[in-house]
Image (cartoon, rainbow, N blue to C red):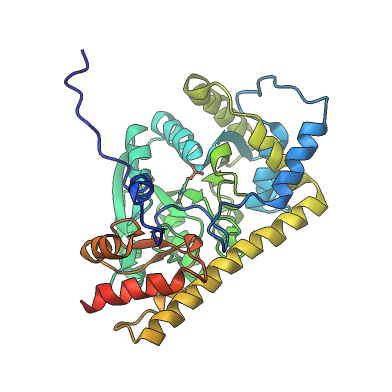
Length: 400
Ligand code: PMP
């Protein structure tokens, strides 16, 4: 009965790793995956996470009972504090509801399902380009996806005018997806002044902000600095959705830890919204997993462990920034044609190189370097040892 089923294509991002794994070359390099690697090219479990896990294992009072539908209460409270700030009036006034979800993806999905059921506008505007999973998540949730201009290939920077024009002509009340920081795949973020202009425009048109915060702390190494965009929108007293992920900033990728927060106008509305979020979650995954959220709560609630986390987080962010400089210097040393300053200007895990799909295919074929066909490379997958190989490949690709 399933003989009619056609083979689906590999996921464009995860498929890069599938191809990489098949390549026997000893010099192969995977710059596709958005996961942090050490200088030795190895995945990293943070020391503070290991410590938290040890504490959890040693605590014999811990059991494996189900969490409530909305997840671990302590985790939710601490997650809201992390993104909105310890002194956030919205938290103090109980206008925020936070529910634990399956990492960033699950948080986006739960938020989108709620909006499709309970919000008067079904259209969501997402940046062009954006993370490849965004359009699928929102479409399958029942929202209608449109794009707003974001990236300018000519400057390899923000198309701010295009962005303002497109949001300016969006229908009143439309939902707008915003990357809180470290925009994926472009590495291009608005400045704080530009954020303020975006905020004013969106509020004047009653556009609903839906922040995707997958890289808090990963962009600058500073958790508060990377939450500025979100906090500006919360400070004006208006509504806002935020999907948080602990995949990158705590290295908990496979533990699937995240949270969805909805900032409302009153505490009463927030509690009614939460009651409806439970109706979304219950038939989707019933209740979220306990382990990862317990790790996060253990780290966030203890001052010493929190400080330890920020130091390890900053070290990851700094290594990525140093890779940017090293790659830029290596291309300059080779006299590679073109202005490569965007490599050091862009923010977060990825560089949007400007290489086209043909050049990418050449680099994969001749140099065994794997990346998404849009020319996005994960700086976290690079090391001092592999920078020269990548620089050679880019040089060959643009001069051939
Ligand atoms: N949003 C963006 C922009 C991302 O880059 C990612 C991870 N690649 C996510 C959300 C979600 O990741 P996860 O579900 O692993 O938290």
